[in-house]
Amino acid sequence: MAGKPFDRLLINAVDEALGLLGDSARQSTYYHLERKFKVSKSNIPRQLRQFEEALDKIFGLGAKYIEISIMRNLYEKTGRPVEWREDNDLIFWKYIVSMKKSYTEPIKNS
Image (cartoon, rainbow, N blue to C red; front, side, top):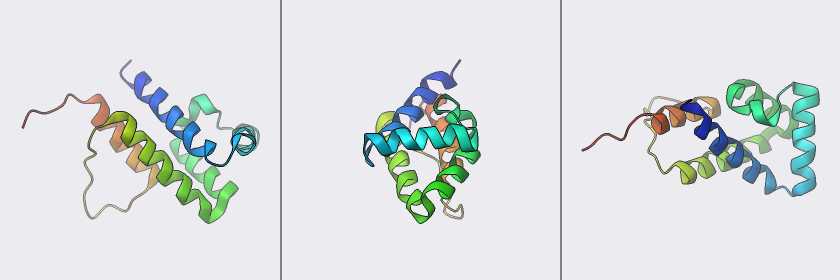
């Protein structure tokens, strides 16, 4: 399946971003994501909206910094440009969906 490698990259990007908080905080975040919000680490790629909402509830305004760190990590891992229109607000889950589309499509020759 084309999405599987991307899903692994996304999970690694999330893990690295949460790791910036320290190992205990990362583990605690995963615990709360799964227990309180029903979003397991392995299901993050399929539950992006729920994951984003859970981060907002857990971290408040700090969630945006975590989301930006995840997006940066993911961009570094894929090395692929993302098509983004100027009129789109930077919404975390929409960015991830666009990144996945960019990653799974063949590179266009210019």
